[in-house]
Image (cartoon, rainbow, N blue to C red; front, top):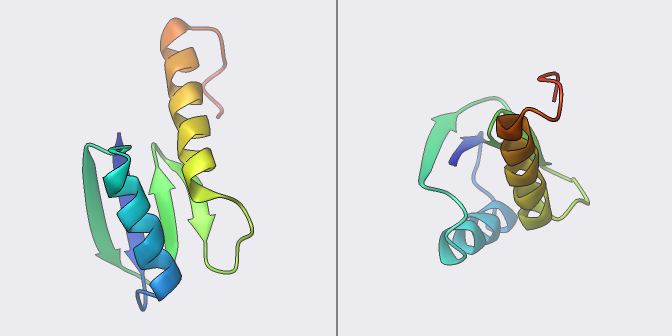
Length: 79
């Protein structure tokens, strides 16, 4: 899974999320882009945005599950 980190200023919260993704080996690659706001995308799904209360690691697991189900052909490709 490729994780894209789009950042304006990398915050401490964002660094902790990136460390956790690396530590748990959830991504094969992490790509950094300079942008207008801080957010993290995995498999074309937004998993975290600044001031978001969602757990980004759980969102990555959800993205992996959706990707695997799509490969099996059981879910429409709108997700």
